[in-house]
Length: 558
Image 1 (spheres, helix red, strand yellow):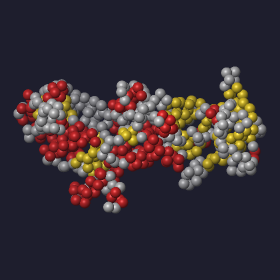
Image 2 (image 1 turned 30 degrees about the vertical axis):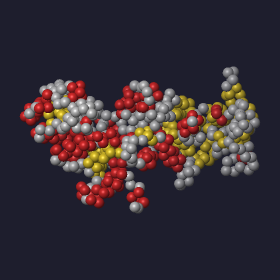
Image 3 (image 1 turned 120 degrees about the vertical axis):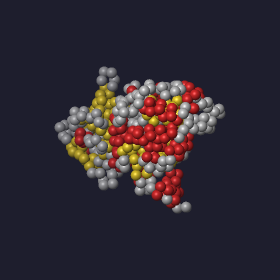
Image 4 (image 1 turned 180 degrees about the vertical axis):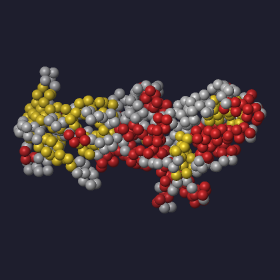
């Protein structure tokens, strides 16, 4: 067996065998079929990468088909967001299609089943239908309406379509086997009445197909060769095949893979909608949300998400992927692409008492030492008064504290070695200013002082600093699997998932920050410009910390 063969996932093995055997003429046609009832999340990204990637690998095409069979929950806003997300991930579809494109054909398929005696109109209530399906160990009981004649069913179904009956008054059910061990075969509902305005077909229809009926037939209409679903659809596959067989249409086939489950978040659209509607987050694109638009706004790149999907692979067994792997993927990329800049988030003033007043020195700082092309450099103004991080000074430093305290020395990034001589406090005892002296011979890149220090701290010139808002995002939930915990999943929301720094100081080079460009705030993490930014007020989002802080917390707890 070749090395290439060993690396194939099970779907690629199936497709390669189909191509070898000449099935479907060696053609590969996939589809990505989201329901436009919410924004796509990271789990959909895995499905997108799989459907588009596997078709491209074998010279095939992928359709984007919106499963818009439930007019009550669907909206064009979601359609637009889905298209934007797919394109942002780097994929382009062959055809943009909608299940609603096929409403006439699907209705005709339902009529064909009635004419074959394989479907009937049922007046039972939802409770009666559920009770009549039996249990996994007991067969179902036919309703009185199961014995209706073909003519009666055709008449009633036509009248359902014409709007003569109220919502819920009647349904159309497939007539299969009430004793089947597969509960999906026990006369499933295939059409229901919904007097609701549809975002594309308006008020033309008041009967709508169920997913199990529309899905396979839509695949067949489009000549989809490999219909890839998640594992929960395994029990539905026999029904998928049954409809296609009875209707004698193109034999699309369904295959299943494990969906993506990610720690410290929820993937249910219903739960995500709750978070949005109840204002636990600012919207679908809140950077804490697991939506693709949320990750985009937070500063994740399409390539980092594609890399993540490639690393986790395609499995047949459900598993939960640790969020740290996704964070690793974006860190690896941003380390090579993010521009290095200095920002002080919790400022305290440093005065260099022996530096000339009024002097401005232009220092040089690397843009990115990890960049393949060298990254270039920018100039950084250096003056007598600087902002540094409050945590970089301690009045009573412990041993092995390599930053500043009385008598301690540290290097200022790209600048000089300084020594702390004194500090000031206010009436409440808070340190308000520290006084240092600098070693003129210790300039970075030309140090002749012979002094070695272990600590390096960042800074921003007080005279040249600009203010910005910095949003420090963290994991939305404080437990690994909030959906499986007892009680309401929202009880496990992390209260520290967003911390807003309103008066951070940034170096002047950040005034030219661009959307789409990543920045490493030295010693603080990776950041991007937020869409809330204005020329008067820049807002930066933390994409990810420099290191996996959560791994340390888990290790402490063990």
